[in-house]
Amino acid sequence: MVKKNSASVQRLIELKICQPSDIRQARVDAEKLATPEYAAKLRTTEKLLGAIGDPTRIKILLLLSRREMCVCELESALELPQPTVSHHLGLLEQANLLERSKKARWVFYKVRDSPVLDLVKGLML
Image (cartoon, rainbow, N blue to C red; front, side):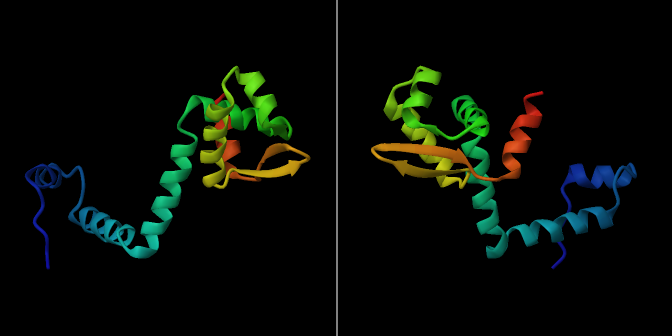
């Protein structure tokens, strides 16, 4: 089934700004992105980008990129209450950006090896 182009797209084609083949290829690509295989990847990407889409979580990632820290150290460094820090850590952990370990009664966090950290550091330049 051939889909009709919108008036705006038709005008772009008439002005030779884009080709009909470009529009067809974009539709094919969009259909691939709508498959169940890509839907799971899109959800993972959305969760990951959402996790780093908050200034406090970016600060946590940058602090933990220097060394492993316990929750109480992060509370002190960020001057935030423990529940707030734990909430942010939980979101970063759900996005698979952090891993935790327990030492006595303290929970320590460290950054997992991830290209996301390189992205965050690169954007901070």
